[in-house]
Length: 439
Image (cartoon, rainbow, N blue to C red):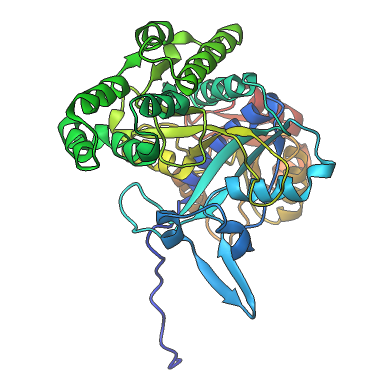
């Protein structure tokens, strides 16, 4: 016996850790998203988890500063990335002479925020981002391309979403037309809370910063407008003649025409003026995708247009547009609400069970089957009955029994563990049968 005191195994809160059978489903979701991004001609990018603090904190500000994991190693001040957009900005600024623009990249990776851990909020989570970055200018068709990409991703995941789309220039211009240009950001911050705190509380907050009662009604009325693109645009385009306001209207009309040309289902998106998105770097198109059958999930994907992605790192103007899916949160919501039904306890198609002194032959057979199947050899020194029980527990669909007689005859006992049926077949016929009857 040792006097070593055992450490109680435990993990930090806010960090997801899945059993293998759930991790397989999460990996499959990642693969589906990756395939959609790749088929849309986005190229992969993987940036470091750690960045110089000077780089990572340049664009943060506000609450994000309090959540960033920050530490020193020697004299080097380091942060863990809190999103994938700032690393993208740093990358394009460093490599602008070697990049062909527009630069279309996707990145799927973990990010870190030291916020209060609670249900649905994680300190480590996977983001699935796709962005298009231009040099000097970026046509609006790129916005439509990202919006179409949202539709494709959630179709691939077999999840029904409704994408709420707007343009921040509408509210920028409307605030300016009402005489509140200097208070625009404060007004938008308050308006952004209307679905959480309600219209009356928003009006009270607007009154406190000096907005008149009449204009409180004007502002709350416009942001509550949502529905069919053409109908909502016809309702608001005559509200004011402000140039910024009209720019927002024109951009939405142009994007709508592109989305129709791309064949995006018009039932999968609406115009929602109340979509503001709190991040200050959004300058035009903004969107938030939600699941209409589960409004309690809130936003499952969001993004928008930013005029100058890399302004802190280069003098060149690099406008961009992108989307981000918080996959850890989405998976957790689906899992907690029993919306994932394809869980399997194993990815094994076939398990080979040696009988007698046939392990070498079993390993040779594993090598043969592994070109097409996920194949495993149960080489534990246990009884045949216990090995069958273990295969059943893992829900392995097929087992191959290999004894000395089977080695001599080259005919092996293949058993379907779900139906109980059993056949004596050659290895070639075993493979063909499993491939044609995969469970």
